[in-house]
Length: 106
Image 1 (tube, helix red, strand yellow):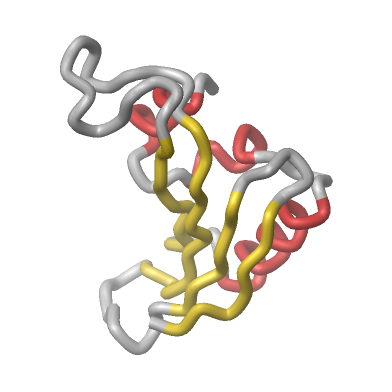
Image 2 (image 1 turned 180 degrees about the vertical axis):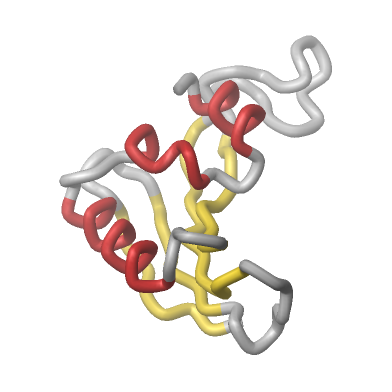
């Protein structure tokens, strides 16, 4: 894994751009991810919280696969970094889509 860049978005979310292309040879996987660290808006599973706890640190990722290319994820990383996009704009690409959307309140 190679960390290409680290930043904090204007709304205070820590983000990193990672290149995993040397480690993963899966079909339709383009080898780039954006990791992020923010605060969970919801607990999951409700009442248990083993995945996330409301008000606590939450980490997940946005990954490139299929039609979502490396160039697209790099552009989206820059957009997150400068504040022209938010995690809500990229929710279709969240690693664990439905669960992450719930945790993030999207």
